[in-house]
Amino acid sequence: MKRISLTQHLIEEQRQHNTIPAELRLLIEVVSRACKTISHAVGKGALGEVLGTSDASSENIQGEIQKKLDIISNDILLEANEWGGHLAAMASEEMESIHPIPNRYPMGEYLLLFDPLDGSSNIDVNVSIGTIFSVLKAPPGMANPTEQDFLQPGRQQVAAGYAVYGPQTVLVLTTGNGVQSFTLDREMGSWVMTDSRAQIPEDTKEYAINASNARHWHPPVSRYIDELQAGVTGERGRDFNMRWVASMVADVHRILTRGGIFMYPADARDPGKPGKLRLMYEANPMAFIVEQAGGAATDGRHRILDIQPEKLHQRVAVFLGSKNEVERVTSYHNEA
Ligand SMILES: O=P(O)(O)OC[C@H]1O[C@](O)(COP(=O)(O)O)[C@@H](O)[C@@H]1O
Ligand SMILES: [Mg+2]
Ligand SMILES: [Mg+2]
Image (cartoon, rainbow, N blue to C red; front, side, top):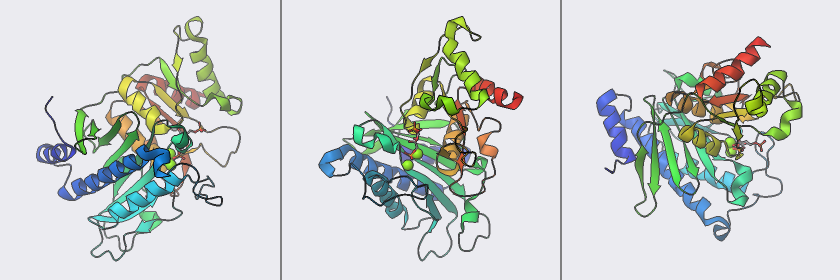
């Protein structure tokens, strides 16, 4: 196998398609280096004293208890990117407000958003977790970055990716020209391309949803899941398998590898809370990746990448993966 590094790939993409200027390449390289550092911290586990909760009172903006690794990963990403480069500001699931690059002049041309550690409930039990990131262009003429500058629909992302810290550490990236995967060569410390064009099959026999919430689901979701569960004896005429890792990165990575549909719907519990997942740090970057791999991503009614964000920490319902299944469950919502 010819070894193509992440840097070689980015340079080649720029040469062939002119989509990755050197400034964006540098930014992606810095983020990928931070992911390498996070992967080392994750790998140390109890030996590195990185497991468990940060301290009794530590909650993030969404009222979730922060794990030590949530904070460590957030700090690693901030520190790696704070030197500036071509970045104007960052926003994170773990921080209440945006983080402008200190003493930045002239203003950078990119905005970086991240979920530093996705799958927090799996940290302490040694199950795959990850980092998700999204890159937007700063609006033209931006002076001092504000939250408003980040509120761009996902279709305006110039890059998105995730790293999954599992049996292998894998970085998955799109810059709008397909999806590429890079596996971390732990001995060499480098990202080596292991898939040059990930493709999600249009059909699937596998679905992912947290079924413990079934009693709260809205009718279109119940209808869809009932049909899947009826299997060969029901409407669909075939059996479906279920998987739920409870780390979005791991569930999406499985879907990218062999197809499937991932769902985290809104439900009847709290009408003011449209789903659990975050639009800017989870849904948008994953939707960009999934679409670039031939899949689809909606909030049950609309394409996720077309949603106009209203606030930084906005939540959204998510249905993504194999196109025909996402279209089916979306049509059930639109009929209802
Ligand atoms: O515990 P639940 O309700 O099944 O939710 C699992 C979902 O929550 C998340 O862990 C949320 O992400 P964070 O760990 O970044 O908060 C997703 O990765 C996952 O899909
Ligand atoms: Mg997350
Ligand atoms: Mg997180």
